[in-house]
Length: 265
Image (cartoon, rainbow, N blue to C red):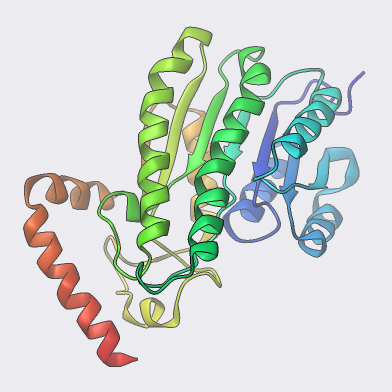
């Protein structure tokens, strides 16, 4: 019998902290076999101590490395008997900087982790998803994929790319009976969030701070439904509609916000 022993399984990148960690913990609580992957060995070891070796795999994975993906998926397949119910491409970095001031190495690091890593993950995971009835290919996008965010333009571009990829995959993967969806979270209360944005966040509404646990709960809901985009909080759907209807107005509002943030230091 496989290590998963017939349990449903989830493969999570960026699992050592934040949204990925909370998702791993939640799914373990639900009785799933959890594959947790990251470049942070300390975070993975801490997660293993909470979840237990019998309930998952806790392995290093550089999502920009195609051969590392192949090895990770092969090991996961052995543990689950060749099944994968939920592939959660969550790993990403939020490095900021104005485009004309960022080094090219920094630009490509963001692109490689946030987008190339996602495509590598999908290509590696599809064979197992195809083998698993009702499976879901889920990726973390961002509210920055609704309207590009000044100060993190490359990050925004990669998240727009993830959103577009997800929409295409939601059609392509249907031929295998596999669903595709993405998360579009707003301001998540993790160390990646800048102090300036944290201080400016309102107590309520679409730009309130969201806990990583709230994101994890949305991942759980996404597996049990058939939606393409998951807004966190849900009010961000209204922002998306505004962007479609009045992009120039949003541009001017965001220009004023950037000026206020710059003035505040």
